[in-house]
Image 1 (cartoon, rainbow, N blue to C red):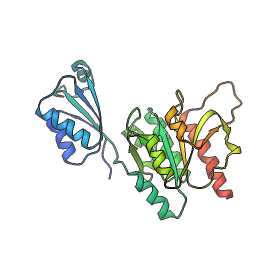
Image 2 (image 1 turned 90 degrees about the vertical axis):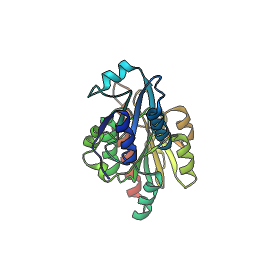
Image 3 (image 1 turned 45 degrees about the vertical axis):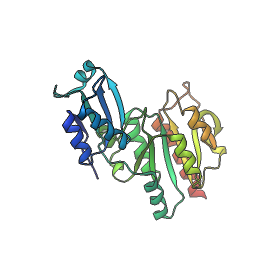
Length: 247
């Protein structure tokens, strides 16, 4: 199911958005607001695992498109999120070992859209993103994915490291990208696999990296030392594709 990206302002509007089933990505609430409608919104946010940020009245005024935010602004996702089990089910239906992208701290919507596009073209069964410190499925992400978001499920999870542990129990193993790792051509990247990509500034977080079975580096011969996250994802994904084809 698809939704247009929405900025929802006002207490009743946000409550009605939850009741209608719209996937809310993030809520901004004015510091100190504690009345009945705000408490209802907080309960709904907790129930749906929505990220809540508390900001000043001035900040909300700057964000507001209508000037009538009533102390709360919500952002609804452009697309509905999948469950991790939906991704595994897709792999099972295709009779293929699972191939999943896990993205740690990708905050640029153009990067996320490009990675989803690459994931689809590389035959990955889905993409997993964290709830915090990451961009959601905005309209910009949808446009940049060039339609791939219609076919590639994206799941949002609270804890990426815990999700890796749970997927390991289901037979997947994990490789993350890091310039200090083993050259990717020397690794066996076949079988049920999760490819973990971090942002180009900080890379993959320490806790997530510790959960990975292998750390892969991309050989670079130029004068700078890092690739854009979406480019790194593409290079590593197609090494996985190459190894899968060759068996």
